[in-house]
Length: 93
Image (tube, rainbow, N blue to C red; front, side):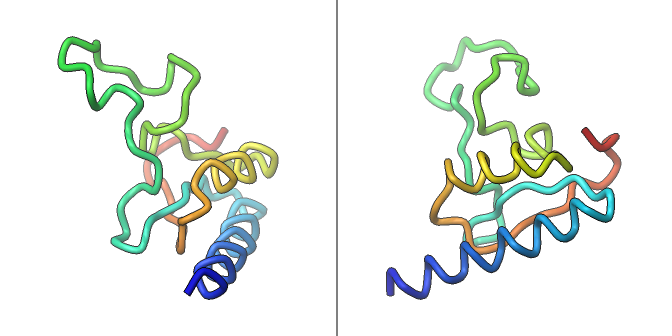
């Protein structure tokens, strides 16, 4: 099973990088098609609303990027990712 997951992650990363080359901001998705990285603020009910200003991964579409280095970092942080999502409506960055 681990080999299949690793292959799925590698394939998802390759497709995400291809989409990013076309100007689409992407994020890694889990098997359930939700963002693969959970919010770093999930255990703190008093945390202010953060759209990635804290610098950590886990902000859903606010993590999306067209930068191949950033995309590789996102997928490295979520080795269980099996797909990618396109952040529609956000300016590519």
